[in-house]
Image 1 (cartoon, rainbow, N blue to C red):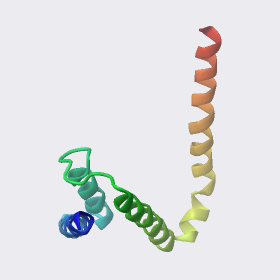
Image 2 (image 1 turned 180 degrees about the vertical axis):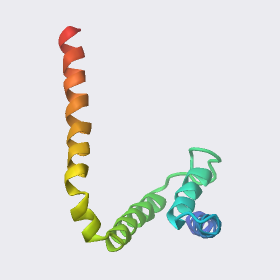
Image 3 (image 1 turned 135 degrees about the vertical axis):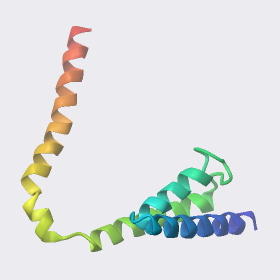
Image 4 (image 1 turned 90 degrees about the vertical axis):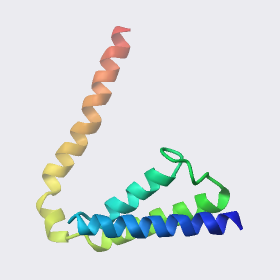
Length: 106
């Protein structure tokens, strides 16, 4: 019964903060993520991690990624593919080289 109350609290909080986020001309997902931070163990600690909550959280992440994929513009992805890959490669290679250099000096 506690899980149902926790799920209801999560649902209401995310709906309210998503609506507030839209009113502030921001994406609803910002409010939804802030709701998780607010009521989760990071801030208020109203929701503790149980098996049921973890299961619903994983399902929620899958749905969020699916919806993000549906909203993706393929023309923009094609346009920014090369700069995006350059940033991604540099973001991986530079830290690896720096850490390797420090490790070698150590």
